[in-house]
Length: 423
Image (cartoon, rainbow, N blue to C red; front, side, top):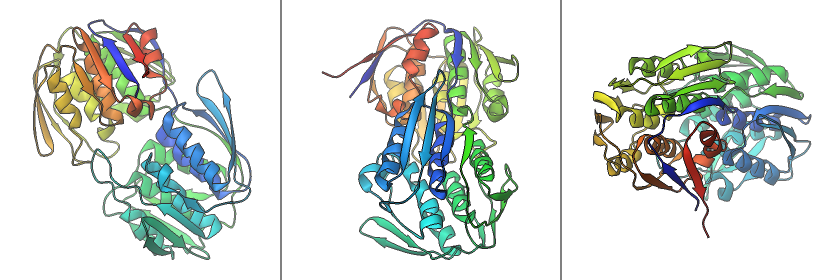
């Protein structure tokens, strides 16, 4: 497995181009199953999860091609016919977002067999809401030998209330409902920008959706969808990560190709900690780290609150702030694995249940550490940039799942980081 070798202690300066959001690109790729016509997706990030989804679509018999652009990729996808209705465990286990093919397969082809995703390092992420919602739309669902087997000659519109907010659950049911007969009402739906981006794409394909960007989606089913061309939104988590990098290193970064409206909660918390963030044009942000960061408490929430996917990165910044920061994780029950690795670097962190108390400012020093998941790996990179000496970060395949060539972007803004390849 590849590793990162990081020499810390240097402020970051310069321009960073933010990539497309992989969490928007993945459901958009799944949506291609809803039509036999060609789909064109721009600004698709070059990350491992996109490759996994392409492999899954290929397994199903979907044609796809990629063109490398100056920023991101352009993907062309066409699902003329289905060679196979089964999403195998070997691919689904690599990426839980593979569950997103369930709704489109069922809606267009009347049947789907998708492996249950299995465990996750950051806690349980059950798919029961996906299944309950599809059953409400008239699907027959059986769990057989670790697979979800869903069947429906034609889905019927219905009202469904999400007991807990689910991003992929909302996306799956929305894609199923666009081809259902009649009207579907999804209440307590996720409002994340990635969900709204998917709805925007579906409307371009001919779907009828009301309430986009709200927690109540009204979907009027149509008989068929057509192809479309769509540009994926900027990655708000990568944006937040680089804003945090400016703060934790005391640097000054200009972030290009961003959507400031998607990161207001992150910017507010970073500004409370002393990071100065100002817009420069419609799609640029300038972030300047202070000489002395201030402690500030954080509670993760569903959008538009502070995202759970930024909790680990914020913890790295909190180690360098004066005072105690209380971080409360409300979304996942086991998302503090990175805290133990930060402690190895000298951080003062106490975790009890869903709360972590970070006492700063502590002098971090380089150490061998191990990434446990995608966002934890970003946290360790940020801590390593602020630390003295060398940090060796193992299992960085996690960060490759969601950050496009992050070490190359960091080198361009002054970081001393390099990928160490296994023999």
